[in-house]
Image 1 (cartoon, rainbow, N blue to C red):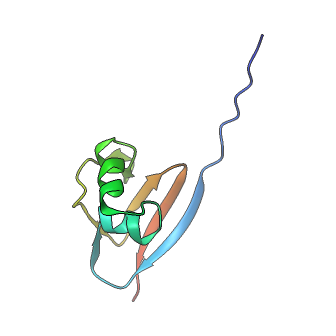
Image 2: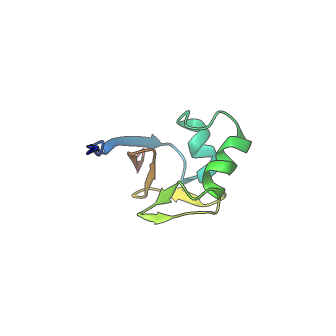
Image 3: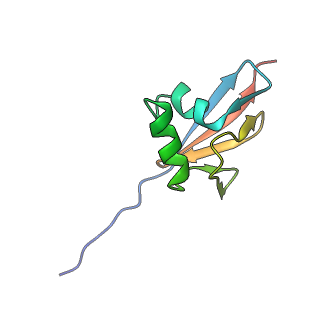
Length: 82
């Protein structure tokens, strides 16, 4: 028996922030990806969050203009409101 697996296409979304940076755990809560800080911490510690293409395990990582956060087949491109 053959099983066909289709890879879901990656989605892309632009996110506007009004501050110089946002912490990774706060970003996950801001976007509704994590409902609580504990859940955000778990996502980061489990290594399922990438920042600029690399797995990031630092929940306090500062996300700035031009960074890309990837989780659950969605790429979030950060833009600073200017």
